[in-house]
Image 1 (tube, rainbow, N blue to C red):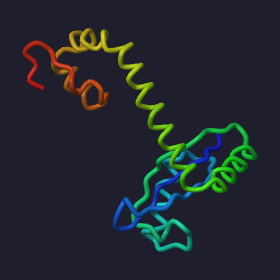
Image 2 (image 1 turned 120 degrees about the horizontal axis):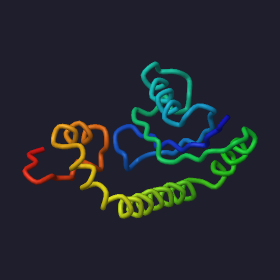
Image 3 (image 1 turned 180 degrees about the vertical axis):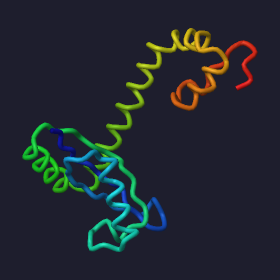
Image 4 (image 1 turned 90 degrees about the vertical axis):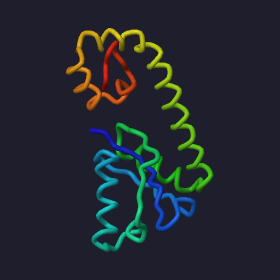
Length: 141
């Protein structure tokens, strides 16, 4: 079973005036995010219920509950600047890895487009975001 430590960015009127909420869960971070949104809608007695908007900005996966709990406490103790650093690091890693992966697969994308044909490509573009910019000769999509 997996356990996740996650950070939500929470705000009301301006995303520039926000707070971070750090927690841990055995559900996926996206499921937990939906629960936090319902806290606001249902006006429940929970810290995040006072905020209208919630965005999942960081998460980590742990194999053991105790390690996830300890990491959650560690992140909370270190403050807002530390959390912002984690988020910035995750964004950099994601962008860097995506660029690296894209360079590996881009030579094959044109081949995929020709195999799929125009109809297949139109359907694939809805399911696979990076195919949106692929064009075939005479392709109007």
